[in-house]
Length: 260
Image (cartoon, rainbow, N blue to C red; front, top):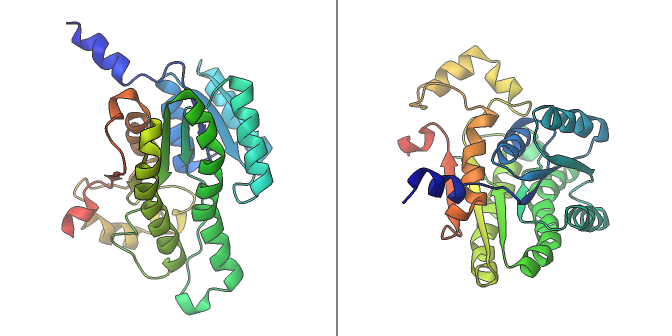
């Protein structure tokens, strides 16, 4: 048996089409780049068409396959049209990564209802809309991978991120429900729970030496995560090698949750 070739095939995404929401920056971009490097044609999605074109140019300059679709994941008609158009253009849609999100840090009683709804809409309702639109394309092919972005905030929430923690809790619960419902269709649904990762969302934290020093007391790996640290988990969950992984949450946190 040619073991090297077997493993290469098992984790290859060659011939697959993946759509990653919120992929013009941060973790979304890290995942999109990783999926493309594994052989997938990656459809980048974000709100800003100019930012998408910049990232698409990066993919193509590296010899990777991709395209771009700008739409708001909270707008039902735009989601349906965008995902249907992406699937039609590429002939299929095999992988969906629900990554788009926003953040507000403030005390619970200081949240306005509009701020609370915006976070829930983007993380939870956006994941619902995108997944609902993607399922028919995956069902037709008899193959699909839905990957949600959860968070260690579900298991270890902190002050001033109550809306974010609530949204990610909803996303994580949805994963298990979808695993049961979609598994018989050949579609798996799993989540990735990143730990503290250095992105624009966390700039106020990872640029604070005092916060970082305190955080490192709980991170055995001794550093902040980077977007490229999250990508291998997504590649695995999207691959044929994860065919029997369904309804799971893969934590990528440098050991943070090991402290309980």
